[in-house]
Image (tube, rainbow, N blue to C red; front, side, top):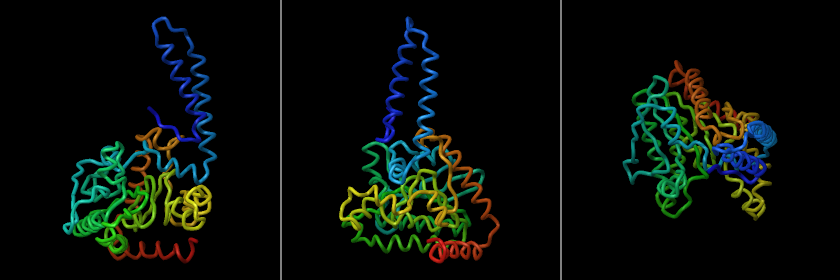
Length: 318
């Protein structure tokens, strides 16, 4: 069953009517209604294009959180080959909210890591809805250390509502772990490319996103805090998340305009959840292009480019 967002109700009604007519036409004694079906399908596509051409920041936030969007595990299974997961931080344990390891990408070895939200209830609980603990960020640091040791590019895929805010995480040094993840990304002597595939919220995202190139899927979001969190602090009312989303500039075009991200990966009409294979193919092409731009740069040049990239945000981007 397709999952429709609230603003997609007109599409849901049309698609339900199309499905009903298709079932009727499929019967042995069913009437010939091919013309009627073609008109409805054309109308559905047209309406979908119209709705998605006028999305505001809050609706884009809903699309970024769509349960059927491609997750990290989908990218691993589709875009990469020979993935070998490397688990644990060698200090406390293995955090399932961040998955990482070695893989092959278009003929080159890479280290990849990212947040996994899970799709079923069981998987969501296993991966803690993509909200990482300190051991997740320490695992990320371990993977980056490994990448630099063997001169392998790093790819990261943030997709989180934020780092886990529970007592255990704070006791084990959540802020310190995120800071070290950010610092290690900035100090890497190998190419580092990030693609924000859904939600890139707070330090939970930047802890694995201090990269030479930061890309975003068209309907992803990226911010220091979620719209609900911002509304709770500024307006004392989480129900004003829609207003906060509009004011925060969390969408890909806004972030590209302010040079906070370096590129946008176009999604199929209606979002990546409607055609995951096509969306991931476009993402792979963008990542490959970014890696090609960075290949041949020395460790010192990579560090200098990355440092200048982030310094420029404070000087010019805002």
